[in-house]
Image (cartoon, rainbow, N blue to C red):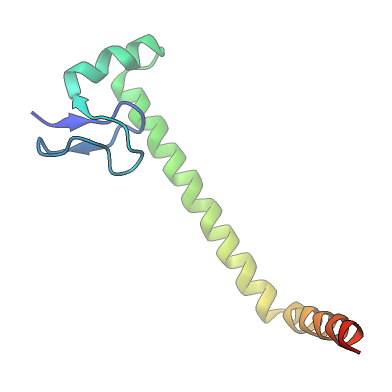
Amino acid sequence: MAKKCEKCLTKYDDSAGVCLLCGAKLKDEKECAPVCDIEGDSVEKAEAKKEVRRLLILILVAVLFISVIVFIFSGAWDVWVRVIENMLMRLMG
């Protein structure tokens, strides 16, 4: 029987004893269902929430990556380099 992490809902084969993602002890999938029921979520609903979190994290990473690229190629990078160089020159002499 497959094992499932109660905290992050990651599924593992039977040989795993600890979740490699969050470090929680793994239990059989049937044992995890009551935990989800106590929290008011079905297993399916909890997995859907996990997928939404993954999607939001992916979107956040993409936005940050695009922001850095725009920052570098917009010329703002050169301005900050000059500001830092001027600050270092003032500190050094």
